[in-house]
Length: 316
Image (cartoon, rainbow, N blue to C red):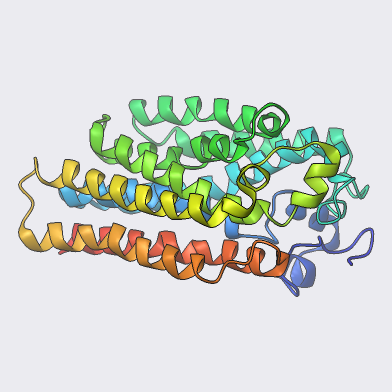
């Protein structure tokens, strides 16, 4: 168990924040989850999906590199801001859960006022990046703040807080597409829905770590809702993700008259993603917290498989 002012319980041992960051910055970097980068990846990957699928349907542009880089920086900043907001609103709950009581606010490393100031700074920097996008993308980026603000409260009133996380975390699929094309269409919406269901898959696995503590303090989650039927639900989510992403690819590329090779490569994205999800599902033990955390972290690779195939389809 980490010491009061030391590393956070579920951070990777020996992470760069604990080893190399200046001591004064460590509490804030921990607040932004810089010591646990998986969340940044899961926020970023749908952005890359949207950019790559739009480029495959049209043609890659040099500006796509900037959108990808800006989304990378923005994902880091907005994930940090979202986690800061989450920790501010959940500070009483976090102090009652073994895995989260070592976080900066409940452990006393950062005050609520300091956390609020840090959150505002991260949002301000994100806004500067967003202003480099086109008008439609800026609007989408601003609207994304609504589900981010609501998410921390979802577990108080619904058994489906993971759905609210999915609504917030996959907005980048819409943003990435609109950054390239300037407008929305059915394809990015289908891609967004695929990402939302994917979030239900991986965050249910994540939530199984805390189900006993959550039951004691009255916090709701799909892990508690599904219980011993979790594998059945996750299997259904797997099928839905593959189906929705396949539909997104077809909706984007068929009207554009994409060559067969481009279409085949893009369709490998949902296929490869589905097989990786199945591989994770076969290892799942919902009563083993360490296994749940390991599989949750491995979902980064699930999303990157899809991103890779879409990117290759865009550049061939």
